[in-house]
Length: 228
Image 1 (tube, one colour):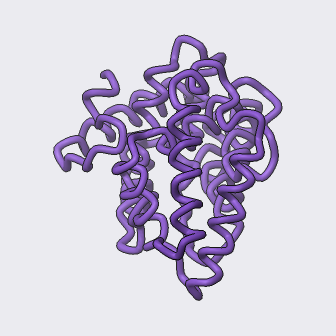
Image 2: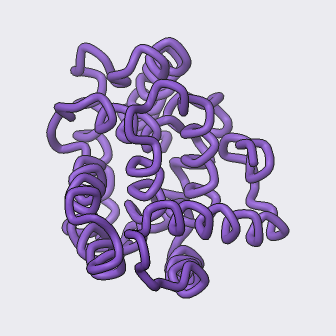
């Protein structure tokens, strides 16, 4: 299955793709099981599907998941541990509790609980590390960590209209005073622009860096003028 079978980048989620997502996860889960281990991929998908369908999610939903998988498919030939990175993508936003700042840690724990005893401990530890790096609070240290961070941020590099739709969806998930949202958003965007590179891999840097910087600069200008 190619990325086009699920969703093009940030296109509206096609409900008919739900079964494709489930089938893809099932194949991945089975590949990663220890020999003789018994674990139902259907139960794993059911748990993930219910989380990503939570009504408070506007951005971090199955569309974001499908988008990330599509980006993974584009770069798959350059990723060292492809199954580990894909597992991390499936689980990196499984916990999305607005108002908390430990969602990635809780998502990593969710994966660890589901994989405990049925996957190799070293694989589980690697996937947990990949999930945790999607906080984007620290620069990734390994190439696969760079890839998952770039994949998670790839929608920053979509055309302006798409970027603004995503921005509005992220805003809709925020629970709290508007001034807190704008302060946090501006700080994050400015930190992105201060980086020598937003995208750490050559693949995604060439693909999205320029558009992402233009989008962020344009949004910050709107915020400074009080127009967003």
